[in-house]
Length: 125
Image (cartoon, rainbow, N blue to C red; front, side, top):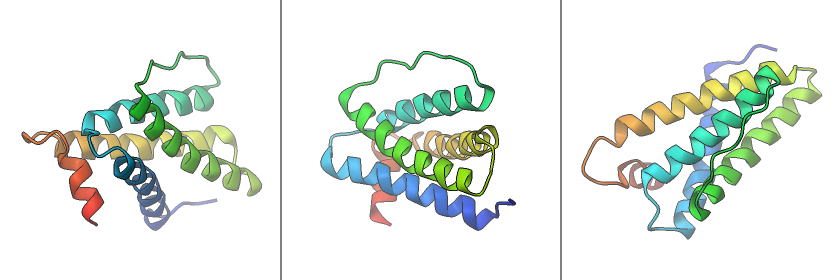
């Protein structure tokens, strides 16, 4: 199955929606919270992609909430792709690339003085 840019953009929007939902419940949360959660999710899906074992970093309560939100969206995608007979390593690899794309955009947005720069900008849309 071939994925389009629209598919990837839709997946990124779903992940952002999960992050925004946690931010609305935790308005003190900062961009770094999302960065840590994304890095943990990337580590998780990389272990699935390469069928290895890697320990998950300790996460704060808000980082854990963001991580779980990201995982719920991504795990649903993996299940849907599995129903189309897409191998989990391929699916996990795609998710890793999408999460890295999101991480990169947050790191670029986080260069300002506001520690919630990314979160505020995406929660407005």
